[in-house]
Structure formats: structure tokens, C-alpha cells
Amino acid sequence: SEEQLRQSQKMEAVGQLAGGVAHDFNNILQVIEGYCSLLQTDRTLNQDQQAKVAEVIASAERAAQLTRGLLAYSRKQAMIMKREDLIEVIQQVHRFLSRIIGEDITFHSESVASELPVHADRGQIEQVLINLATNARDAMPSGGVFSVRSERVVLDDCFVDFHQHNVQPGTYALLTVSDTGAGIKKEHLEHIFEPFFTTKEVGKGTGLGMAIVYGIVKQHNGFINVYSEPGEGTTYRIYLPILDAGGNPLVEKSEVVSPQRG
Ligand code: ADP
Image (tube, rainbow, N blue to C red; front, side):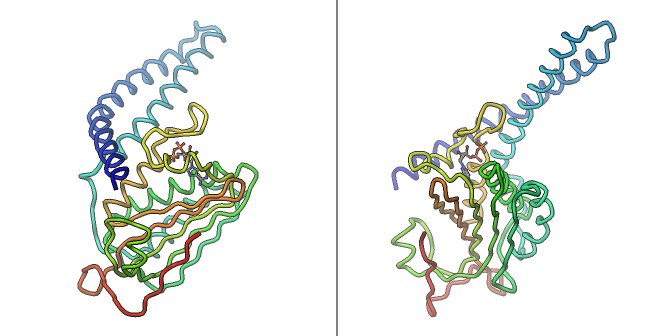
């Protein structure tokens, strides 16, 4: 649709600009951090001055975090696509995700299939899960449930035409990531994949996490849907084409099972 086109053009432009600037900017930040660290060891500084230097370092660190995000967002050429088992990728990043969500949140992980071969960059899929887990954690400050589920689904023309444009019918690996957190307001929902859209306080969010997720999923020839109910939680569904034994996307016309919406 026109809206989708406008969105992807905007993201493309931001990505190019970001990639060009972020690298140099990171170098500048390193100089700032370096000199501040040196200054911190200066014994002639009083406590107040020390505190101010620490504040500069903290800000530089936040800026570095933002530029790392920008670099990740614009890093399109660095993809290494291989045949990967999605279930294995999820298992490998499980421990790291547990660490992100912390002890107050219950982590459910489940796979309904024995194998989900996809054409993917392992690191990028891990990045998707990390960004989703980070948002889930932020949405559940007083605990809740974070769940990751993977399965195999067949999407027919009906599903495709009805819900999504530019999507081929076929067999997909469906990755469902959900939380029981704050949810997303209706008026925010259409903006969450835009770069720099954030509802988090300054220094806490960069607004790049979901834009990165969107970009990675698109590069994997997949698509992502979000369902959210304020006060109830959020569910992301990511569809990636499944590979057949020959490494081609699997297209099945028979035995159609479209997943439920909602
Ligand atoms: P950031 O996390 O830095 O704000 P993101 O691009 O990752 O940037 O997310 C954009 C916004 O989308 C968040 O600020 C938040 O408002 C909303 N959001 C994304 N995921 C969730 C979620 N699981 N629960 C609630 N809000 C979410």
C-alpha cells in the first residue's frame, strides 16, 4: 500500500544517513569518553567536578548506545545468510534472553515443530529476539510472562490477500513472541516500526529496536504483525519462509491451516 511504501522509503533514507554518520560519530564519542576518563583520575578535582565529569561520561555512553543502534539498523551488507534451524537459533539465545528479562518475569519457550529450516543470518535473528525481549521486559516492570513459540504454518492465498500485501503463499516458520505487559496504545501501534519512535523516557529508549526488527524480518523475506491490547499485553508474529530439502522456499497448496488472528 501507499502507507507501506512511504514507510519503507523513510526507513531506507534514515538507514543510509545513519550508516554514514554513525561510524564517525562513534569515533568522536570515544575521544570524549577517553579524555573524560583521564580527567576522572585527576586528584585535584573536587567532588562536584568529579560528579560533572561522570555525568558527561554517562551521556557519552548513552550517545554511543544510540550510534550502535544506528549502525545495527543500517548494516545491511553484513548479512550472512545460511540454512539455519530456527528452533536451534532460539535455543542458543535462550540464556541471553533470560538474562535480559530478569527473574521477575516468567519465560515460556516452546516449539511445536521438530525442525524449522529457514534462510537466515543467525546473528540477525538473535538481534530480533533480543530487541523483542528488551521491549517485553520494559513493558512488565512488575513481572509477568514472556513467551516465545515457534511452529510451522501454511499460508494460503486467502490469508495472504486478506491480511498482508506482497507476501507469497507458502509454508512459513511462525515465531510468536508475546508478553503480558502494558500493551501499546492504538494511536501508537502504527508508529512502532518507525525509526526514532519511542514512548520511553530520554536515555531509556532510542526508538530503533522495532525499526531494526522490521528491517531484519523484511530482509529475510518475511513479515511481522503486531497485536496489542493496552493493559493486557502484546503479541508479535514473525513469519519466515521455510526451506525445502533443496534450499528453496517451500510452497504447499494442500492442507491449508491459516493461523487465527488476535
Ligand atoms: P524503544 O524500545 O527504544 O522505545 P522500539 O523501536 O524498540 O524503541 O519500540 C518503540 C516503542 O514501541 C516503545 O517505546 C514502546 O512504546 C512500544 N513497544 C514496543 N514493543 C512493546 C511491547 N512489547 N510492549 C509495550 N510497548 C511496546
